[in-house]
Image (cartoon, rainbow, N blue to C red; front, top):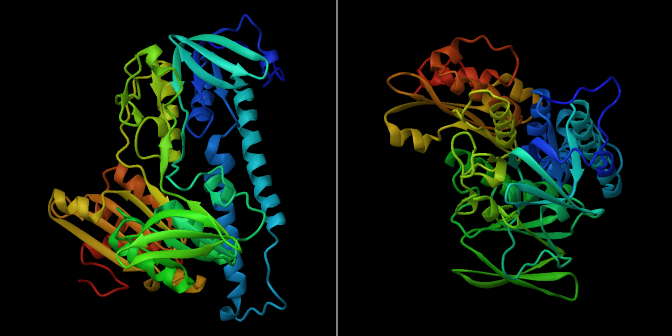
Length: 484
């Protein structure tokens, strides 16, 4: 059981405050990102004596240099665009509208600090110990390298939650000032005049569209036939139209070869079927994916096997060493923060004695482009491969609330089994899709049928009505569009 704490006697975060007698824990969590810190909190709630280790910052990449700061800047970019186009609603904005990147970064930093300090407070309040340092396995021992030297701990259970990092490609080294990964891009103190984005996946388009709204001239370079490979084709059409409307130049089937200094800024060299091309830029942002941080952990000393790039796990996220678990980006796809959180709580409850397995039917995904894309369950193509389906699709422009926001690009798509009428998948492409998709995820988890969603009374006027209408459209019973 966990140690008793008197009121107000929370565990201190400093390594010197952890007594040397506390070298054995029931659970040690390596990594304090969106998988590790929820795991540590839940373990402590269950009375498990827990130590959480992180090498850099509480909250991990997501809270510090990923999900949260990027969405803060994306929101600023959208707000900037809305202010500049407010005249369509009769709102007159006098004077020049400009961006102060210093103040924007200060605002973003305040959000990050509030959340990351909250992580530490929650770990402390629930009775978990925490140490800042780099951890590795030495058999069944966790060795933590800190500023004060190495500390060695043993545990009944170990949870690896070390996350992932941006992939670096030949010719574009992140150590070079003009070459940005997402972390460096989110910390820029100036809006680039010209920016080349290598990679037309969700991270590249989110960042590229954000900088475009702030005033950058953006070029996206993508090796595949299309941006957002693997996403819903109808959603890709909407995004392509938005990219063109925003003035973002997109080069598909194009390979980035390298960069070189120029009289003013840099030149990025690319090549496609039309030949070589040199693109002038101030910075080049590389967003070609992320790689799991499974190296240098001493996994081989503990008998933990790999499965390609990932640590091999079962449906409890247990590795080939039964006392060691792996969660989040280091364990398996999809590499999403909310999946890591689910796995962190799952593993904590397994260690705490609960009989659980990974049984989520869907992991919803969101792309914070403009407009947003959100998905849950099967794609239309996946559902078709399984059997006959019914699809209901309703444009945002048919939803009254959408018209009142001035944001009418996009659609709601609900995919159902033709025989059982069970909802198999949902795609929302449009404003606030990120908030709307949770209803779809719950519907899929609950094996909801099209009629259930269609007959659920949705408040008016709201964007959520589009979900209800799309479910009805799949049954041929939509009211506000012509049924097909």
